Amino acid sequence: MAEQVQAILEKMVPALKDLTTRHIFTPDEIRAIVTRRRKSEYLLQRRGGGNTSGGGSGKNGVTKSDYLKYIEEEILLERLRKLRKEKVLREMRRRREKQGRKESEDDDGSNDDGDTRKRAAAYKTSGPGDSHIVQHIHFLYQRLLKKFHYDLDICFNYIQFCKDFKSFGQLGRVYAEALQRHPREEGLWIEAAGFEFFGMLDAQDGDGRGRNGEEDDYDEQTRIVGSSIQNARVLMQRGLRINGSTSKELWMQYFALELHYVQKLRGRKEILELGLKANTAAGESGDEETDSDSTDGNDEESESRKNEGENTGMGNDGRKRRAKITNTMLLPSNVIYKNAIKAIPNNVSFRLRFIEICRLFPQTKCLENYILETIERDFGEDVEAWVARISYAQEEMKRKSRAGKTMSKMGSIGFLAKIDSNGTRESGESNTDDRPSKKARVEEKKDPDPALSLLHEALEAVPTAKMYLECTRFLRIRIRLLREYSPDGNNNTHQGDDDDDEDGQNDTSFLLYEDEDAESAARRHALLL
Image 1 (tube, helix red, strand yellow):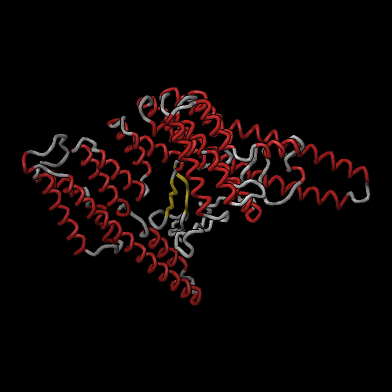
Image 2 (cartoon, helix red, strand yellow):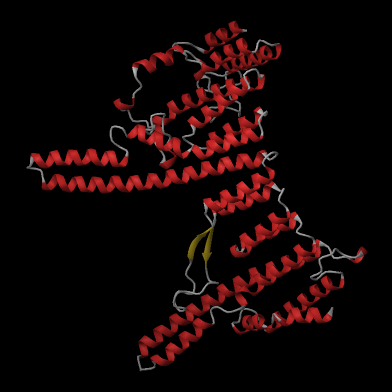
């Protein structure tokens, strides 16, 4: 036991000596660190710890708290080391500035000595002691995982430590080993796929060497680690092969992953289109200045604009082309949904959760409509499915009413600006090309309340007592909203209360027909009962 502890401590000598040489820790502090580590190692070895794969023996067996306490002490030591190093670097920077001013004032030919001092100072800014404490913590975590057979809580604890201290190489190995031992754990698959797709920012600060080792020793260099859709897809597909028939969460997370990727592609496309439009505008302004007196030049410019509009999808048929690209980008999510309902077929609430996910992302209306079509096709006589469709139609009415009031003020916001069914941006500016046709306006006037239309269809399709009760409950909720709240969302029965609707949740204007007040609308709904 003593030999094992001594061997572990002897491996720390070069790193601890480096920390002392660079004045990060004093000799007395190093001795205190060694004493504490020796005590902790003896505790682990004496109580059945170490590199053995079995558990503790009897009441003297080692526990997780012994390892975790040791790890927590090392984490605090690492934070102290970072603070001390920042202090040392600031002092060195001040010293260099003073030496630089003295050398510029003296200028007596002693440049060689100054360069030597700079090289020596640059050499002392980094050393093996910088990574020693983190490596020692990794060593403790690996012993802990082997000791307790990769306990799930320890795995998640270790994963968080790797993220906090940017040990991304070790993080990938931890994910692989944890998934190998816990393949049925959905959270691990989702966590690993999320890291592979979103990645993490790796900012190399004072612990990383600068490019020349002198003036750049404290520059921050940021890079993105991970961010691979291919690796994320592979992990989600492997998880689904193992848990596909039972895991609803994996199917929905995979569905959301593809929608996140679509948003990333749309953002890139938006940026590229903005750059192309800027270059095109600059080129057109230059052509107008040079060819202002030539009619033939103007004809060529108009032809070039048409060609550019066709190439970028922004010409006369730009709306159709953009809508086609948008639908194509949603095909992977559509395929995932089809496979999900094949694996879990007879579950209405499972399909409704896909609609909730779609509502978190813009420009997914066609996907939502397809999901509703599958619910109508497969659950034509299911009361829960009809109730879900009616609630969804009412939410759409509320969303359109709210958008009509606020869109003129907001306009489009970045790449999250919504696109209508024709593929064009929705904005508050009036545009004659974007106005609906007369036929569309007539059809909209014929069916001002699609939720009530679906309610009538539900009663005709499923004339049961349960369906009548659900429809009655839906109408009574509407009547209560119309009587308690005015069309602008203010409370009519409790004026001055603190629960006034600030986000328009109680806005009942979408329930009113043209030239109709709230009382008339309430009576109209009461007649349906």
